[in-house]
Length: 104
Length: 104
Image 1 (tube, rainbow over the protein chains, first blue to last red):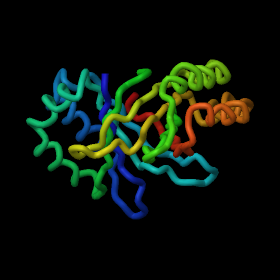
Image 2 (image 1 turned 90 degrees about the vertical axis):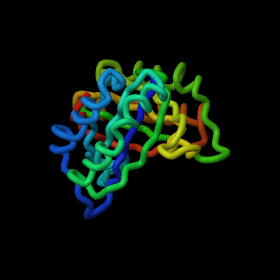
Image 3 (image 1 turned 45 degrees about the horizontal axis):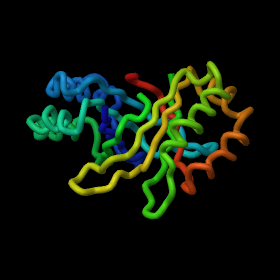
């Protein structure tokens, strides 16, 4: 199992609509990817590791797939539609990472 | 539910022993925290979001707890022992974030 982590930097003054992300954007991703997206999780950043430190990321999602090939097969046919929805909830550019799920 | 994400930057030349992290360090954290750690996950970074881009983090773990207070109650009594184990698997300083689990 792999996960694709999409991490939105917690930039002061930036816009991020958590409700839209939870209720519209990520369900859209799941619907378009179908079975290729086994499940996904969403985090909302609360704090950093030191007292009073801000969270590094204002929000993160993690998309779980059987393989990188499965992710690409599910995501790439819909990439234009999914990317076009991003301005509806944020003006941030996310950082993306693919990881092997060692303990899931 | 909250999660504490511990993210190790993928610094060229740095040391990270994934087997020790999976087999020794994180089981130690779970054992010491007991029920306060509901569960944890471990990721091993594979790639970044662009072709041939490296992963931002060489490894991540996410510790799931009922609340920030529950995390602190489980972790702080053992913080010295847990931090003292870090040099056994890495010379990296992790970035830490606390998040609300919006979709788990």
